Image (cartoon, rainbow, N blue to C red; front, side):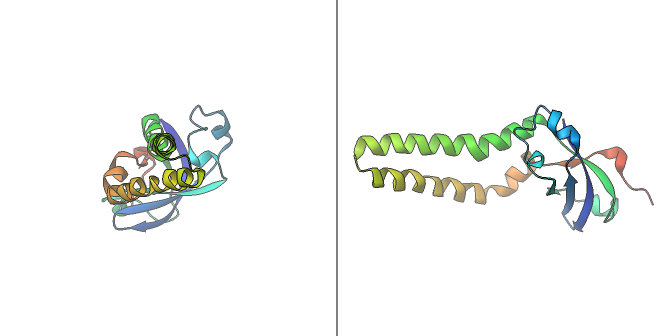
Length: 141
């Protein structure tokens, strides 16, 4: 599991925005190369939990969790698949035409449908690639 300590920045009906503060432990984490939270000192992540607004309050300190599998899935969707599309497209277009401008424009333009597709399935991706809040840090009234 990937864990980050953070403070609840805002609460919406279906989403909690948590400001993650990078800790020194990020540098020793095995997933630091793949985790966007390790790149900057602060990052806001969305935690989708329908009942969370009744349990948590703005300013609460929480620990957000994500599985290593979630991190690898995010890297695969964000980097590996576009790389394959780009290289495959460049290879095919270079076999059809020898024009370097056509190869460059064609390769990049093949990514547009992929990112449009990701936009339309963003809600499904949100359920599969998401952070959760560790149970024991809930605020009790």
